[in-house]
Image (tube, rainbow, N blue to C red; front, side, top):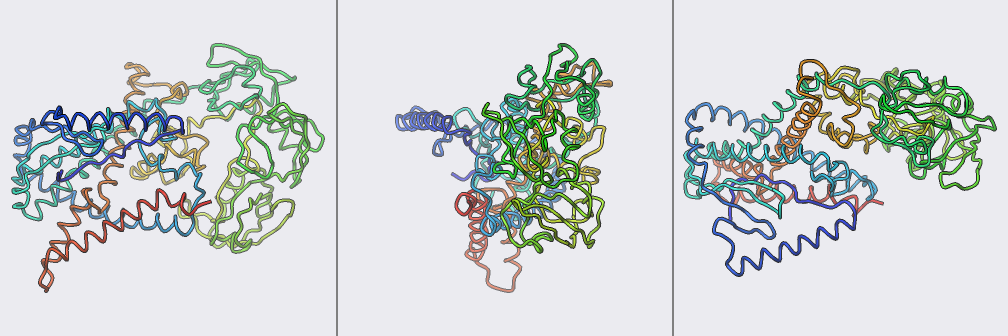
Length: 613
């Protein structure tokens, strides 16, 4: 069956092997039931099957499309604009997939990398590691909006170009909507001009991009403008067996006071804890209850196989024999020493141990970049302790120093590979994002690959995320978010920011308990926090899903819209060449591009597993 243009939505994958087993079993039973009903002739005429997918067909709605299609000149102009946009995006997607596949072959990432797992390419909450189940309403709403406007655009342009519609409908995998379709009449479709066919195929992605712009404009404008950061330090995570965990502090709590002194935001928590006296302190949570917390420096996150050997939940009791209980006390005790001896109380309750480790910014050296030109290719973690003469205790300090440099500047870099100290003189390249000097490193946040907290909490950057969405505050990415398109570009990566190391947590909308970090203000406050957060989530995921649908359907391969646009465009070009054009010539071009895209897409998904470590 030819669906004309099909708005594809990827089928679900599974997070967790046990859940995978149950879902695969359920799908097998479901598919068996579909086959049995089909063989018994029990499926109604309006239900078709494509493997395990059921397609529901209807002819209703064609009269509405006829009425909407009356201003044909307007819709043709709108779709001509969409054709131009689609062609640009098609070329961009072709180049992107080729580069992604070549990257998988030449520099494969570890097969265990969460971002590169195939399941995390899919927009299924609870299945994709980065999309919590609490985001489901917004994702489903955005998906339905995307499917309706996409296929509605195809149907509308069918009538504008006098192409008859046999049926319209939706495709379901069990209870999941995985696609929608408009089925044009084959004879009238062939009779339409190439330009008419191209406009029809481009109409869906044009509408998706228009909805993206509208949704994000409303989100970045009046909705986020009515949201502010609630007072207190936002607790995003609590280290196991830490003083905070033992006191009953939980993720999504706000620390609003320490020893009776108010805490207005994340940046004040360390000062309040440092000012506290004694081995214990009182901590007020959410402005309501007070708990007693022991003072101890705990590891809240640690890189795998890091240079310190520390694990989440470990406590650092002393530096070179000097007892410490706070983050500031830790750095004061380290001072200018590149390597120090830590006294550690393991999270598993074992005996205290002493370990001599480097203290600085733990980075991976990127091949082919300025630092690698001096160190040579290496997979070993490099702990930078000094940059251009300045002491570096963590990656944040190194990042600040790099922002003050300029491309072409020479800088000295001192650090440790294992126990060996080395110093390099590096000529910095240009950082295209900031315009400052570029060293060529991959960051591991925190100190020597670990983050520590005075009481064992990891703070959620509520203000930074709000600024990235157009709210008040300083954006952590500088001028890139000063433009509307830049904000959209950043918003597309928010759900995986924590995984790729740009922020300590992912952002999947105002869901999953993080609403407690925000409050609604201004005129929209009359509608209540729940209503405003719901609108924000619906707009965020509607914009996010629609731009994904638009880009995905612009891949120049069948049965996507890009494949059909490629065919009609190739026919138009070949027909103007001073040769005896044949249908076979067009087929060679479209097949070659389509197969190239399919292979590139598979390599992008599975290349790390095939060629990675």
